[in-house]
Amino acid sequence: MPNTSSPPPAAAPASRIDSRQAAWRLLTTLGLVVLGNSSMYVVSVVLPAVQAEFGVGRADASLPYTLMMVCLGLGGIWTGRMADRHGLMPVLCVGAVAVCGGFVWAGLSGSIWGFGLAHGLMGLIGSSATFAPLMADTALWWNKRRGIAVAICASGNYIAGALWPPIVQHGIELIGWRHTYVLLGIVCGVGMLLLALRMRQRAPMVQMDAASAAMAPAASGAAPSPLPLDRSRPFGLRPLHAQLLLCVAGVACCVAMAMPQVHIVAYCTDLGFGAARGAEMLSLMLACGIVSRLVSGVICDRIGGVRTLLLGSALQGVGLALFLPFDGLVPLYVISAMFGLFQGGIVPAYAIIIREYFAPQEAGARVGAVIMATLIGMALGGWMSGWIFDLTGSYRAAFLNGMAWNLLNLSIVGWLFWRVRQQRAVTARPQHSPG
Image (cartoon, rainbow, N blue to C red; front, side, top):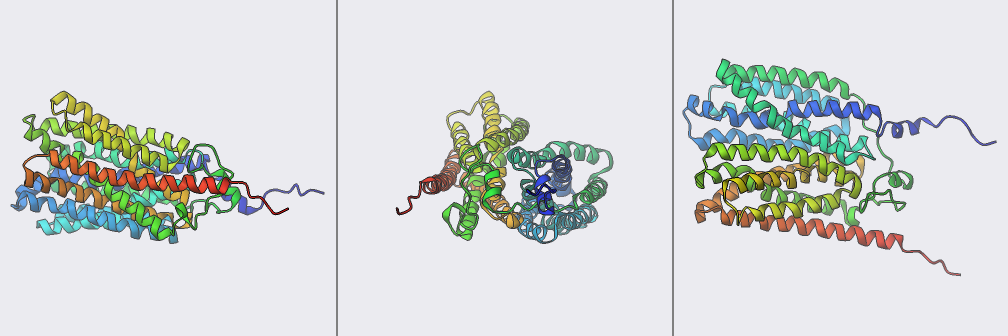
């Protein structure tokens, strides 16, 4: 008689994918990202007050942000690896303590170096725990709506950028920057710790056999594919080589991305529109970035991660090119909004690609490495654009430099997409056995 018993326990993890439990976990993840990434945006708000109190120059006052971003990139690899080995909850709990301690340390610091080291701690252990590891974990809980789920997770970063600066500015005016930092550390640290307790369960580990591969969205289209993906040879390459290519692509796309994001305020000042107009354009760009991430998530669910990244890279190049012929106030507002809509989905697409092509057991560390590359790209792009401006006295060459880096990203992603199509064609070719 056929076996009509219930499925074996091994089938249980698959039932949690795309489930209500996954949806609640995504909501918890969004809260963690908003709380854990607060330090990335509030440090620029307190910069004038810190500079005045410590009596340092603008360059020295900017060092805490640079140190935090570098540590955030490096910490993403470590926290991602720890999450792969031990699960998310211990990593998030340590991150919560680091965020709380970092804010309190910064608020009590007596020098710019203490202030900077405190932000380095928050980046290395705190914010890094709530970015790459959470994106990787989210990708492991979803199949049908994986793209939009990762996009929602990544949008928490931009939500933090919209939420915390006005709150911190109000706190500075009301109780001073030191008390505001201490209070913010307690709120974010305790909030992260409470939410971390809801992340005990490990993500369902998707088995890399033909059946599970057929469930996953095809890398070259929306419909599920009967052709299994060989995750031991992503894109037909050794995993290390494929990872390095994605990291180079991450650096290139974010060097290009940093040009408008870091220098739009200075650019508007040079054009005579004032810093306030530039700040409004930056806010508009980030707000449109939230929309872009959500829309790109929907697109990713239909066409896959590589195609989404290819589309985003091409559109980002168009957005950069539009800054060259138009420098009026209204056109710059429009182009800033368009640039935000074009580039917002690029970074989350890397997490989707890692999920589609690499072993899920390594997702945290691999996503952390690519995110580190994108942060290096942002830091390099911001500095390089300023350096080119100092050499030429104009941002025109800086925009052209951004377009060149964007072309490098487009070339790498286009080549990977071509390899995917070649692999699919070879695998789909009928095999004739000898008669």
